[in-house]
Image (tube, rainbow, N blue to C red; front, side):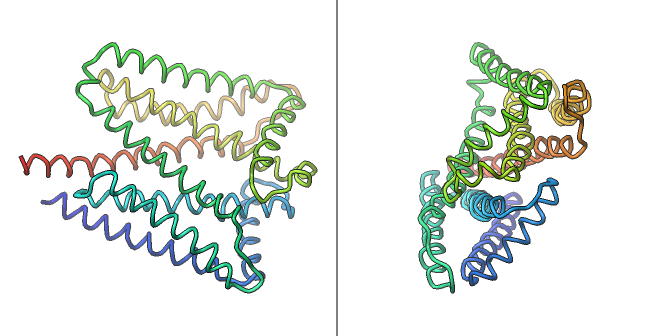
Length: 328
C-alpha cells in the first residue's frame, strides 16, 4: 500500500504540471502578434547568447518553430505519458488512446481556436504538424523505453545466452560506430568540417516546415545553431542512448553502480578528448570550452532522462505486478 500512496502523490504532481503546461501554452497562443513576437524574441536572445550565435530574423523564426512548438510538445507529451501511466489499473492500449486523443485535441484547439481569435495571428496547419511531430516523437521514445525495460526484466531473454550475445554485439557495434564517426569528424580540417555542417544544417532546414530554404542558405546563424545543437548536443545524446542500450547487456556481469559511473564518466571524458585533443590536432580548428560543455550536457541530460524514465516505469510496473499477484 505504501507504493500506491506514493503513486497517488506522483499522479497529483504530474496532473498539476500537465494542467500548468496546458494553461501556459493556451496563454501564449492567445497573445496578440506583438506580444507573441516579444516572447519569442526573449527566448531567441537567451538561446543565441547560450550558444554564442549571432541573432538574425531567420534564426528567430527557426527557434520559434523548433523550441516554441516542437520542443514544448515534446515536454507536454512526456508529462502526459507519465501521468497516464500512473493509472495502472487501465490497460496499456487505453492509456495510449487517452494520451493521444487529449494531446491531438489540444493541438487542434490551440492552433485553430485560440490563435484564430488572437489579434494579428491566425491558424497554421504547418504549426499543427510541428506540434504533433514533437508530441509523437516523445511518445515513441517513452514507448521504446518501456519496451527496453520489459526486455531487460524478462527472465526468458536474460537466460537466453544466444539472444543476449546477439543483443550485446548489435548495441556494442552501434555504440562503437557512433564513437568512431565522431572521432573522424573531429579530425577533419576546418573547410571540410564546415562543408559537412552546412550540408547537414541545410538538409534539416529544407525539411522543416515554415522556414524558407532560399533565405536560410544565406544565413550562417541557422547553420551555426544546427551545428551546435545537432552536431554536438544531439550527437552526444545519441551516443548516450547507445551506451545505455549496450550497458543493459552487461548488467548481469558487472555491478550496476559501476556501469552508471563508467557510462557518465565516458561521456564527459570523450567530450574533453575530442575537443581539446583531436580538434587541436585538426588543421584550421581550435578547441572551444563551450563546445565541450555542449557535448557533455547532451550526454548527461540524456543519461538523466533515461534513468529517470526507466526508474518511473519500473515503479509503475512493480505496482502493476503487485496488483496482479493480489488478484491471483
